[in-house]
Length: 338
Image (cartoon, rainbow, N blue to C red; front, side, top):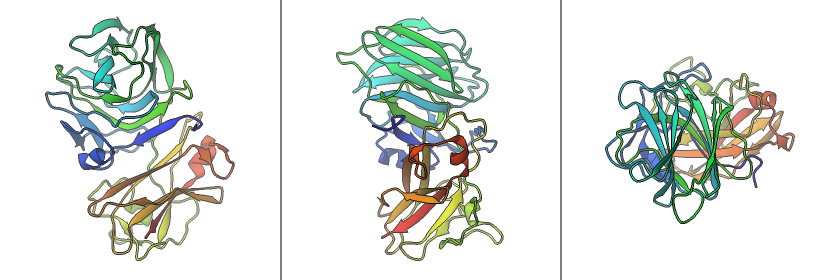
């Protein structure tokens, strides 16, 4: 089992719910909100998952043995005044969490219509600003809920947290059936039950590589732009990109500094790419202290943009957990394959 049990990661920089559907989401009522910016690394990133509509919408993919979830929660302004999350076993809700404008969290066993309100927490977070939220939920008759805000555990609650005939939860619904909730999340991470650790994630944009190398990709941007700037969180459909002439062509990019991070659980690399001629797949990799490691190639869709994600929970150069310094110094690799 993986060191920190990371089983799913996405950043919603795809630019369309088409990609979310391809990852197994029920995307009814969802959109990609390009007006919300988060600045955890000092740079605005304008893509996030927005929940809207008037029905039960926004179901994530189904996972095996999930227990912890972490995400960036956008500031709450105007109406509605809360953000609701249903932790489901199949299509039934085990626990409903309602993050309110005053910073408190309501805990309900079952759904928001027929469930039982168990507790209301003290004020845990400032909803007028963005926050990293991490939740550990053991959904059984002797259940445990733990919430961490910006990497600090701030609330623990124990009770009967099993509303259905089976313990556990397998997915999250971001939109309730009756409450007109509309909220924005980004950088969703899901972990299994191998540890109880609650992370405070940080996202670093692509930067200039630590050592300038001669990549084999051709930049399409305006004169004077570097190849790494062409893929600096442009989002699908951007006018700047890098292209390959043949399978085997690739490039190298810097990962940016992870300032203030005490522990690194994984390096997650996500990229968008399209097929062209004999090029049908993309390989992502990391280069740590001169050691390059590539994930298996992922086939790109026959048409349109494909999203490829790869996760490294260990530093390939050390065969051990990442240190913040080594993760900050690592370079990201991308190579096309036939």
